[in-house]
Amino acid sequence: KRVVAFLHPHCAAGGGGERVLWVGLVALREATDARIVVYTGDVGVGAAAMRARAADRFGVTVPADVEFVYVRSRRLSEPGLYPVATMIGQSLGSMVLAAEAVLRLPPDVFVDTTGYGFSFPVAKLLAGAATAAYVHYPTISGDMIGALGTRAFNNRGLALALPKLKALYYELFAVAYGWCGRRCDAVMANSSWTKGHIEKIWRRDDVALAYPPCDTSVLEKIAKGRPGDSGGPVVVASLAQFRPEKDHALQLEAWALLPEATRRRARLVVAGAARHADDRALLDGLRRRARDLGISDSVEFKVSAPRSEILDLLRGAHVGLHTMRLEHFGIAVVEFMAAGLVPLAHASGGPLLDIVGADGDRGLVATDAPDYAAKLAALVDGPRETRDAMAANARAFVADRFSDAAFSAAFVA
Image (tube, rainbow, N blue to C red):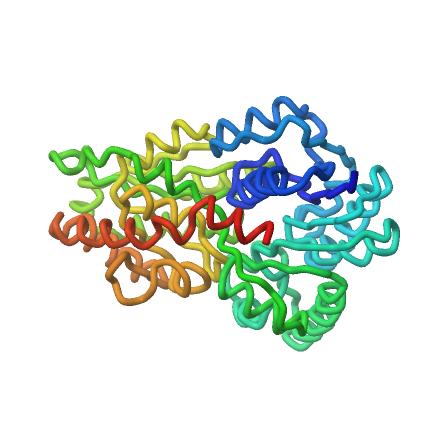
């Protein structure tokens, strides 16, 4: 049998990228009898536990014959190892990771679902494999270069000291990234924003668009009897892994800017997975920040909660909060909408172009802390009928467009 291998070093994590992996594997298994392998760095998680996590977090049953090949060089591809020139360090580390993976089990088809664009020439050189990618987010883009001065990007260790050296660094990296991207035989992108940037920087016009699978069918069944409708607090939910680029700090700053009377009527629940020490350190910093801002009494953190708890959160929430600038797609935003929440998302990337839009019919978008605070206050304090109308429009918009079935059909096309 042909070996189709997926490079996904953090496949035990609980983010949207992992849902793409598992739903894609299920679709591939239904379409082919190939031997399916996942290269993972989760060396302490056995195959049974991996399947159990996928079922618990995403409601996806991973086929029993999917194999896991464990690689031990994952740490080389993680940002915490490279405080300076992070992208170059991570990219070179990902090449070592890919080399270890394909040498452990050479594939016929090598599929990157993590964003390791430098892995394609490695797979071709060492295994002679055909290469494919599902791209969530370009490693570098014109928009990202324009955001170098922002907190979220500097926190990733991307900034260098001098502007001219910084620009040269990015230009040279973009050339290398584009060359590696052209070594990929088949490319899918998860949003219009990602597709446009990948086609530009990889200099190709054959990138297919496949919106990621969102758990719309289950979420659409959630009962809409919300506590806030009968005098309880208006619950604002955030769903995002605890990573710097998700900019949870912006959520806390916006929350602190709300009038005290508005905060007393509302509660912010920040839920997400913390994958490793870097994420946990960021989470600790967010908790300290909430205390410093004096908002701890109305902010709750849910860390690596099982899917059942996430569904309970969505069942009781009214507003879905998203703050990542240039989010490639925004699965969490779709989940908010499918569950009947009103999304308040960042006015950029996939949430703006593909999901929420800018007209205010199916949710709101914002840019900075005062903007978020003003729109949060409008949603919390405004008429329930206005919020309900936006929620209904949002739910109708995502019903079929972002379903598992739509993704599966595109993924194996």
